[in-house]
Image (cartoon, rainbow, N blue to C red; front, side):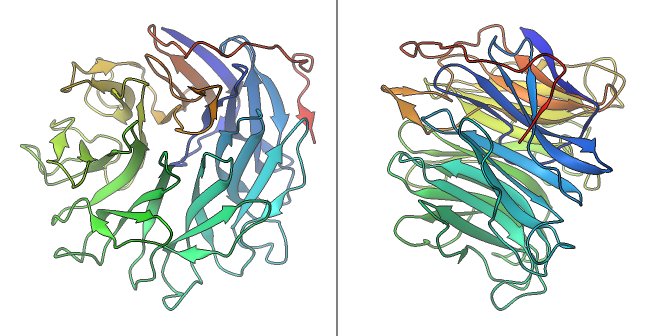
Length: 405
């Protein structure tokens, strides 16, 4: 395995979207937050040597804080970034969802939303044709304007009409998106107001074919469930992981859960069942992420208490599922919180028959090392990428010279 520093002096990025992606030529891209000009700004960096060294580019220079950046890379190697932030458009004092694309340089920023209500938690995915799909949680929409509801918007050659995934009188949060091989949109989120246990957050799912299908409950229990992460396998089966209480032996602790949907939802499986909180204690949220390799093995990374030597700190844990869950591995064991692991994975794009963001084996992720105030990358010892795509190095900026576009 290998661990490298992507960037120093960074701010924790608590997005549920992906923060690491791979271009068809093998270039790795990461997105993160740093303070610049008195505000938190979005930065991106790329590596042409497998994550060992990185060249930094500043994506935003706004007069307001930016947050929760997430990214994808299309079949042309173009980088797409979405985030929430102030200082844009008409409603400059509100967090709105923004978008920016990098071709050979960063293009003009585009507003996905511009309203006088807070928008947060964007998550993006690409379709097979390179169209951009974005979900987020926001106030001010539909009938229930005083509640955060899950929204969706698609960009083809321009931004299409926004669509409400939910419009209920309960706050809905934590959206995560993935697209299948046939172009269907799959979204999971956490929210109360559904099923039998209407007073607590449970994990919900909704699919868009030509229109939005009926919402389905992944969980409906009397204990809170948070932070869902979604992927689709080569057969378009849905895999979801999250953290929640009320399961197994340690019902008062948040533990990591998993569930798969084929033609219907299969039995929920406990990834952990321990007497220490995993990914959250209900107040502090530290993240989890799910991914697949090209053999459809499940890779799950999260941060939890109670492991290794430094049991009082959140450290990164990992577990793999083949036909069953394999032995858990502790990937960090430090006396400072390690937060927000984001595994690399995207079903699209496909270039020359190769899915550029689906490893043939192993896994990779970025995360926030709070003790070092750094964004780091972890590459597993067995990480391998599909063959058939030639690596073509590109010009880079001088080390220590951030590019601002």
